[in-house]
Image (cartoon, rainbow, N blue to C red; front, side, top):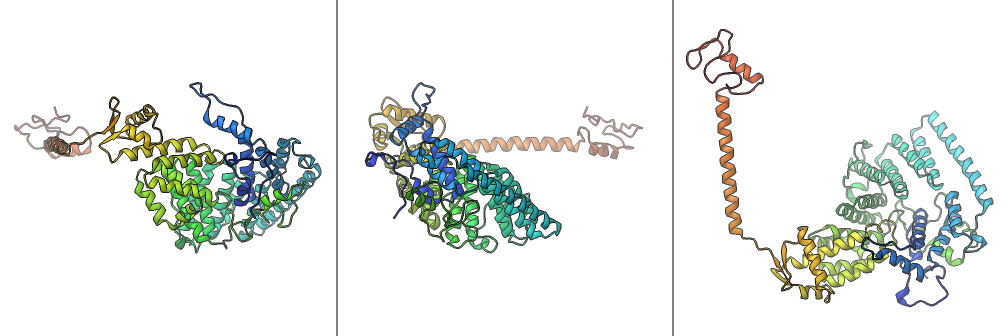
Length: 557
């Protein structure tokens, strides 16, 4: 059956008190590196219990929601820390392991205290392994074996990543590019750097190396792309790229590029990258070499049969191992569910044409399949496309509520919710010459708050999002009418005026050129020199060779 997290509380909960995050789903959807990062983020969010007053003195909604969540689920942060502890105990990142044990603080029993003997053993083993890797790399360099040097730097990067030294890992992975001989090698290197960049939140590196991977694949696999490709170039299609890179690797790079665009608040670009990732993920199947399994056998996390250690419960072990089969690929960047949700939300807040959304959901089979697996996201997209805005905004509120605990999207939830609501209001008003605010308020499920709706519309009008005016007395919205006949006459008059002005300027310039009235420049001297030895217009001649006729002075005097 589906893995379950440890019991949250001793009392029974009704359906309205379900936790806003499902720890079991998170643990089963990602590789261990990504699982630990998300569990620690959730623990941080549920530990923030201080309300932050807004500028107007009202309590901040997000902080109030967090206080409520902490009151209803007081053990959720501890459960996340316990799961992170179980994973980290299998790994080599002893510093993070000790930090998690200190955060638990003895609240979960002695089995979650720091195992000093294990830490000392792993530290000694890590030191020996680091020396061994450095020695091997030095030997490869001595014999100038290019492929071995590339593998040696890759192993060193894996070691640094497993121990939590992200900056050293990026440096080691970056050195492998000097020894890449095929486009497949370049893509693998860029993927390693992008994954570490996402973990370290270094999105500038993520953006650069995703673009370099796209350039390498776009070159057709004939050689290694140069470092000049640092823009946001698109990734080729699955069919054209499959011969020089694994589709799953390209899907991971597209996910990482989407997160980099999201961090820069380029929502349209992020939506395009997420849709692109869905296309590559569909072409990846279940056999891509660059994919990872359900978390077993990864460097730094023990083997498939390794002990979770510490007294972790059977339920906790089931969650850590996940419910995925051994052949299933688990993303280290974004899961398929996240891909669908992020893609739809980014598209909704950045696209002004509802037809484009319909096209994305109907014609893009891969993205549609991803959305089908996420019920609320699919319903949100369908309701928005069908102009059922009141229901769509209710579903949007439910989706946004869950994303408050997502490590990548939590900073964007307020903006996206506001942007989608504004687009819904604009799309509702677009086909009407006159709209009744009372009926509009009922449509948007706010029948007793027409004044608030009026303020929203006024704000949209002031920002030129809606081209209309509000009749406060009659509570109606009037679209600004456009007199096409008058506009046509105005355009013709303007064009005629511009033509006359341009023609006059051209004639004046031609006349000045004809009479040599050009200020400075070699061309002026050549023209005046051509008249030397000849009479001016009135028979006057200058022995110096410069025309002195009327109107023939050097400066037009």
